[in-house]
Amino acid sequence: MNGITRYKPSEISRLDPFFDFDDMFERLNKSMMRPLFREAMEIEPQIKMDVKEAGDNYLVHADIPGVNKDDIHVTVDGNRVSITAEVKQEKEAKEGERVIRRERSYGMASRTFTLADEVDQERIQAKYNNGVLELTMPKKPGVAKKEIKIS
Image 1 (cartoon, rainbow, N blue to C red):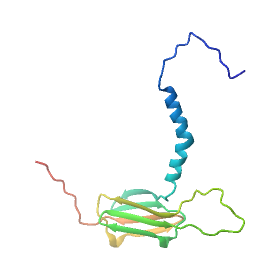
Image 2: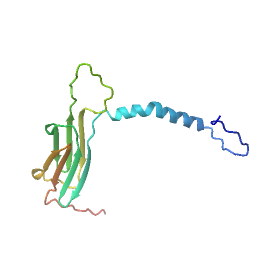
Image 3: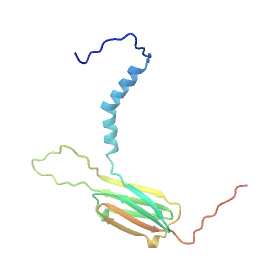
Image 4: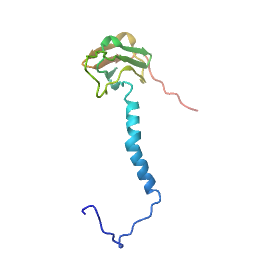
């Protein structure tokens, strides 16, 4: 009998005709929709990264775990940088095993971003260690910004 409360007519409550609908949609979202969206979001691998500016260089740290360095490609075109990586699935199946849960994703991952200044393509340095791609990209010398006055 702990779950039963006594009705107190002195408590005034506001009538909310949509309360039941909100509650119903919230329960539907929690039970059915969130797992579907979560699975759809986790299908493709993602590259998470930090881009910093330090003096005359741009520094990029991109998390690309579980990838062989030969499967990572970096392309620079002026001030546009693209990073692509192929995350390969291990096809080692042992007899008597069955997959209970699979959370690791496989396939192509890519990120493209634009920097404020052009990059000197000849002096770019790239390192890949412990699942982190480190790019040091010097800014191109002699490219000065000019502000245009609007008449």
